[in-house]
Length: 288
Length: 334
Image (cartoon, rainbow over the protein chains, first blue to last red):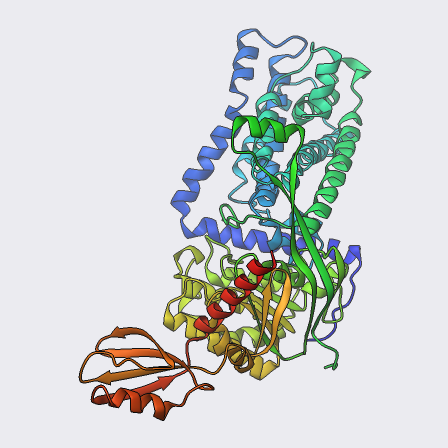
């Protein structure tokens, strides 16, 4: 075997499509191997993911809206949250987003013996577009219905802002989950499920319009456990609720901050991992 | 291929700081305020050099520092002080370059995708390791022959037996044709046949490709069957580094004598009676201190000898004797 070359970051970036193609192939084979079970699982996923916002929707329907939010606007918020959740389950499955499990269970070793930067492993290893795609479809359907009932005329600029905010919401959630998950580097047993707790907090709080909360509480729900970034803040900005108070760059800016915090915490954790390694290993959830 | 060693560990120290837990509520509360830290010196100035194309067994009792050594070599752990150089790389600093040239196989872990056929894991490896199609086909062809992958190729990993899983994992580790293979307990849980397959394969791959192999195992007879050289780690230091024969010699020229006689087990001076099983009496003796004819003469004086067999003691017994002597020495030193 010849001496391998040192590759540039861009060389690795260019590998992402091939990794996604691999993820697609593997996922397609997985789904086609038992189509009946896959259909059952996907249907359940399509129903259960938006069901997280059922209470909010029923409240809005019963009260003809929630505060400044009309029923259609609340539905937009729910569709947006469903779509964000769907993207997470399409692109970051196999406990990539629930990374505290991988850290706590000693499974990071599997990533560290791969000849690619850790970021590339994390970006590509959890890609399962078909088995995780039901929530994306559900989100698109709900969003389409709500947009059709809203007084907005989406033009290319609006769609660009929509996509930027959507990506930012995903990044914000991942930033928070990675930041909190980094605790598992120091407390692998106690913090193994911390990502699950953060995720549950985000999905249960993320489907509510958070208007009317006091400043510190709203700030906490944006910066610490960023439930407000799941759908509330971007929906406010995109639909113009609250006027110019919520700029469309607010979510991307907050997401960038959270991404930095997540990356810094994770890197510090990795340094700790190099120092002490993992004292435990369990294969539960690994590549399954 | 260069002449520089495949692996060099120079004065490597690794220390873990473990927080000791209290047992009673009072103690637990006290340790919250004033934590008690236990310092464990996993490696204490290890020096080790492994030539290219060598098979080296790393052995030692539990907690001796084997796992730490394997993790250092796999690039998963950084030393506190000292240097680790493998294949001319620093495993941590040059991680990407280094791991593309090594194959790591942990006996109790799997790289296989659980719900996918074995074939999918190989496809995954080809893409992630960026293997050219020609190299992939050549390597896979050879591995399929040597490890008999054909019968498990389309079977999901979760349906494989332990032996099949190990064969697939070994093949996966060897797929990129690495220069250095690190095997941590590769035969754990395997039956006799599966174990033989794995050991034969490792010998073959070393013979054909001159791959350097570092292997750990608790099963010393496996290690002896595979490696010429054994590095014994004890309390974070290299306690022995040399050929297996020399290791045996350190505990004397130990031999076993099995006698089948007409009556009960004869009493032999200079030989320790071990057991009687299936009518055969087993003795241990030091071939440097006494001779076989003298022992046989003693036996013949007491009974009619029907059958005689001598053999070397199992390597596990040799190691057990060594461990016991180390522990006795440590106890005296305390």
